[in-house]
Image (cartoon, rainbow, N blue to C red):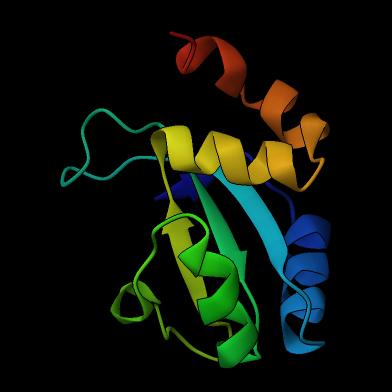
Length: 105
């Protein structure tokens, strides 16, 4: 279950993904399969080759791409989530979801 985002943020992410950009969408998330994760960042791009190349720098495998609907993306958690957001300069998302303090040390 996703929460903590609004329709405008979701729409902007979908538009960026469709345009072939590497786009990030962070939200709160509860899933019994990942009890220690309270957030997830979707790193998406409709250009699969570009997404695969981007994912390599974080050790992400192509088979981990979620092909859900028209918005292929990796689901990022934990330190990988934090590092990808920092590398992209997305401090607003890091601060909004308090990710620095959760992954210090």
